[in-house]
Image 1 (cartoon, rainbow, N blue to C red):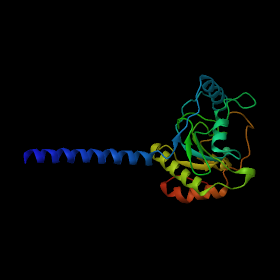
Image 2 (cartoon, rainbow, N blue to C red):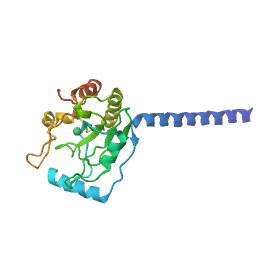
Image 3 (cartoon, rainbow, N blue to C red):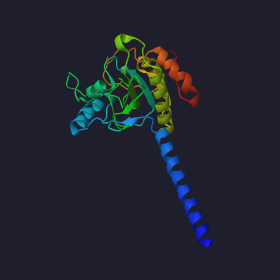
Image 4 (cartoon, rainbow, N blue to C red):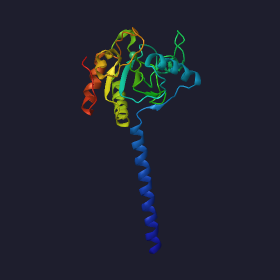
Length: 221
Ligand SMILES: [Zn+2]
């Protein structure tokens, strides 16, 4: 009888630990709403980043303290072709290539392509403090981003906001002027500017509807 009780107790503990492991892996999956598919990093990429940040922000920045999430569309390609594009280190003029920390495919597949706080060049004036999400779409300037992409962006931004309480703003690339009221904009090169329409008003409205109640600041369309 004693042996039976002992066995029962062991079984009880075993079940308890199984439950803990199951629960923690489930929570883990929910906490990471993306897949890691990092672009290979190099010293050259760091060097190009140093040149960019020194020129445009007045100091070398390799790690950012995220204060904003900026949403984009790629206007071209697929998830894979955009990954390949961002893997490139140079723009045509020999400066650091553009890239965001995340790319979202048409079916909502979200890839983290570099660590979240690595410096990336995706929006003039805000790269020093903004995490970028690229959404595959916006072909010919059409507002064609999908519901799956919207849901994936909402999940990711919730995750980032929880992880980095310093994040206060979410805006689309096209809202770069409106976002200057945040006080985050820094650009040392006079006249350095690029007109943008991504990721479209419809997509930003969708994000705002689902995220503004979390205390994040959005801008009017
Ligand atoms: Zn953009």
